[in-house]
Length: 351
Image (tube, rainbow, N blue to C red; front, top):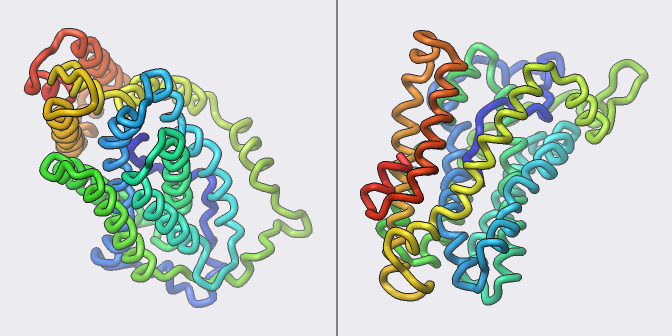
């Protein structure tokens, strides 16, 4: 259940200016208009954070063991790999009057909200597992086209600002969700708040960010040669990836192996290892889940604050040096989990 990334979606094909009869969408936007575009990501990240902090305890209470927990939690990466390229390619070809991206933003938000509302009412492990896969798929339906809407509607000279504002709303969404989870332990309240935040934020973006109506969107062709279908296009893009891109993919796969373990097991590690909970009932377990949420909030605050200095560190040293140092710190923090025993220590380790 990873946090949202902000790289432009590779599956999103921006509409070229010639497709805009009035050119209105390419006029420079005010700061408020750019912020309106980014608000939806606050809802997405709020939903991710509620899921990240509460899903593993729900599954454990319904009878899941660590092996099943890892298997069920494959929902995030698997649906991300499958759903985002498909939905992104479909949105490239969408010819609805509402636009290319906004229909998918609305559909994904509605499905996400429905899954969040049903999740705390799960009566069996199978029901919760199915809902988790639906929830992850629904968020990915929204996330893929969302990242592609920026090059669609924002002038290239303002795209960096738009992505910066999205980073701001992502940070706000994460910190707010985890702090609320620390203050309000009620599962039903948390998931209902997540559904409300997702709908309100996404509706705000959809209805304050009009998309242009391309003149020729239903049949995007290059001369007389039809455009490749999304499967062929995806395979071609992977095959033509530069060597440096392939190296980055391999490197990220190793680092995300550790992060996936963190997102899956941390919220049950804290109750059992730090607070000494034996089962899933009782004050110790509930306090541990709450403290895990506070630790996640601290993690996101640190990441948000430190991100402002990463560029300067890279300029002073090198990108490889900064990345390598970060990986070493992360490895040390993971190793420390075997030896720490107090709530303060685990917060420091996660931060």
